Image (cartoon, rainbow over all chains, first blue to last red; front, side, top):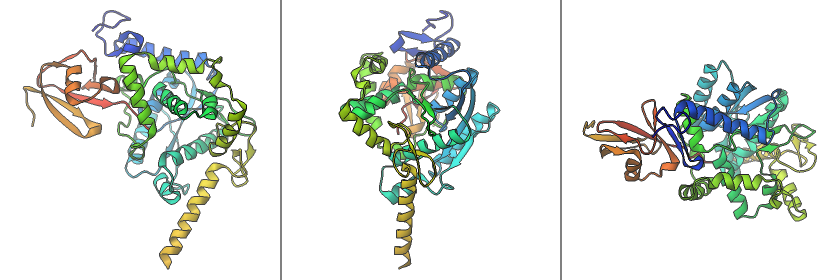
Length: 326
Length: 70
């Protein structure tokens, strides 16, 4: 199969959703254009932005960092060590190696040192690991960005991630979540930093192909905590639809993002839902945030969701210690 | 054991390795391995293979899942 762009070299990547196949060099051009177009269309980034790129060691976040560096953006990487035996060490290695190859040193937050490693925290408060992980990550994304005077936080969520989330929100008619789902979450007075998802137009296959062809050594194993994640069920359903009808995913998501889509407007009955969700989900809320009484972070409640979680973990630990000493 | 008359298909994330007869197209090898083509990239050394690429006997290919959860 020949490249559909240069019509000379052998194709390495075929993309049925674009009726195209590309050789490595032409695929780089195509991929960067897709990301650039996604940034331009939704005004995600400005040339003068200081971008905090959240990197996990996986393909999407490292590819995002790579594309933004090559695009001339001022970036720093943030790695959060979740404290998951083995997996966290291997992920961190990949992040450090990639960063070194680009002359960078990432900012590293170690949750074990912060007193809230994910596996132990989940056991203590009997919550899903992914749910705790989301709360903790959002907290540190915002805190590190605010402390480091970054103007924007960028994450590696891709088209597959966003459509899986959209499908989940639709199936459960989460009107508040639907109204707030967007690749651009504006910043707010009071310390909530703008958050963007510049890879929203590219699929997982495309980021994996880009990472491989660019020689980015990413962690291919899945987080052991995410084996039962519901997002995987939605991803599989959408992937089967995409197999039969290539291009459905991007049509689904772009149609959703259309400003005239009524689902994008918060109806009155969903506004209350959104406010409630915002209390749990600080960083994607509605209205003006207050200041957390415990840590000073922006929140929609008296203390932020991270501090409340930390308190619950502390209490569970004390209880366990008391039982153990009896 | 290495077999020059077979194709080695490695699925590192599943910690699985298959020996399949060749020469065959990538998409046929994936079908035999029970893998949906749109959920993976297929590599041979530093080369990325398209699904219609013909793999010769004695070759080793890696099938890397691209689906991330969480």
